[in-house]
Length: 55
Image 1 (tube, rainbow, N blue to C red):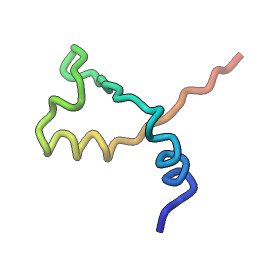
Image 2 (tube, rainbow, N blue to C red):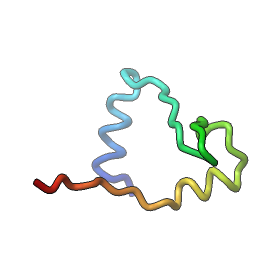
Image 3 (cartoon, one colour):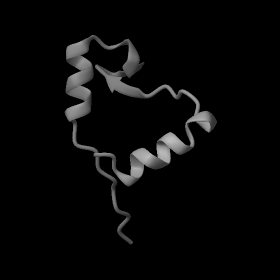
């Protein structure tokens, strides 16, 4: 079953470009694509959040 997001991504596939995702590891930044398979899996399971601004 394809979701609405999958359909949109497929429709615009020709306009997309590869993007490098960096993450902070042990005090320095490193591209996720250079991780081994275990570390890539761990990265996908992380919980991402957005901070709210409180005035």
